[in-house]
Image 1 (cartoon, rainbow over the protein chains, first blue to last red):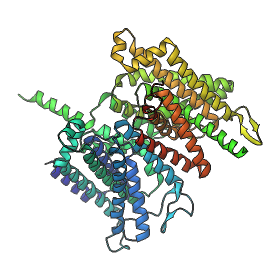
Image 2: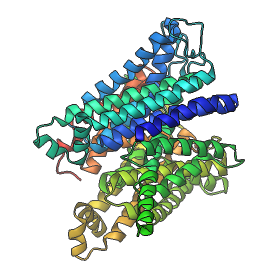
Image 3: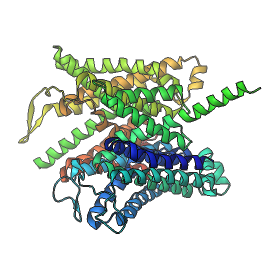
Length: 324
Length: 288
């Protein structure tokens, strides 16, 4: 039911928006969709895995950089995309192995993931100059890779996709990720992951190796985060800001405001807050950070379960009141 | 020989810097277990308070050492009353709320002061040590770090309030049952931590310059230092600062400042992996 609704929504968006929206709006919408995918990846790791990853942007940025570098070297994005999915997934696998098999827990995981994204940020910033390149792709330091190639029709590097087509691809990716997440959570694996979030000791006593399941969901989250990075790279371009503290903070805010422990909430949160940030950026004399910060504080204090669960609870209460 | 001396001096300053920026967080996070992600912005506000005071004709020392901690300490008290008090024991929520605070402070300060670098030049000039000129101010920083650690140690170990604070953090219910006004202890401790951060901001302002976003440069380093330190907050932060500061300066000396930072963070990650309870989880366990 929910999956069908999501699919319908995606098809509708993919069909209608490219026909009616201006180019600028459309590109912006693609950015929003990529952000929603990023929020979805953290929703899986944090909301269902119970792993507070503070550096989700590490995978986002790695996906973007891997895509840009691979596409510049290979020419055809059909080869670049798998590479750009593999790099962040492998990074998540390595980092997750390092953390979970070292029995590192909550706050320390937050600190380590944050530090990793900061290391990548610092490193990417320091790669200015001609000596820093991978194959034919210059890393460009602070400026990033402005010549990030667009996706193309597989097998034909000259047939690059139009912004309209990229938007459709992005929406389909979002829908696919949503369905994938739903399916994973409905599977045996997903239920054990949630069980571990609820009570790790009990899950282990029942014979499940918590480390393995955490590693699994973390790697999946890294993969989806990387996909978001690829799409972002296609509508903006790759630069060290993809790793920045600002983005890693925002992802957490989206998930938090949308509702930890839901899938649709974070997507909604990402769209709403991105829209709000963009709108606030156009106001003269107002810094969007101020608004975003106040919203987050209020959300934590007044709406600790998030927008979607809060709204659902309210609806349920209203319905019960009107029912005879 | 004199090169070694110069590098050694650099390392000492690096350690002192790390200690100064981490100490306020050590009180708020290490002692109170409040993940204060607005720590960097407390530093930034300390810097701005000092700059404003200097611009309005205050003595530079008064601005750095008195105005900055007072202003930020006061802000800390307000923040504790309005936000943090409702969230004790909900670690993730304190983290998110203070992240919001951090963003809001960055936003409001940018709106008021603009996105430009402010600052004032470091006092004291330079001194000649064996043929090398070094800024006397960096020596003063080493001295200041030592005084700050000493003061925190004295207060915690040898004053009635220190005893109450330590007891309250260890077991709030028991302290409360024994008649301690735990709410007040929490409030004062948080304000004191904020004041330490403000002092740190005032002290580093002449070296780093002050921008609204300067906090982001320090927050991760401060956190990883306190976390690497472990449970015994003072001994832990001290030992972690010494270790990480020295490694960072050496790596900077051998490569570039940016890679030096990267090495510092990488070493910290490996340390947390090897010692999941921090340095003081294994060494100096009985220290403060």
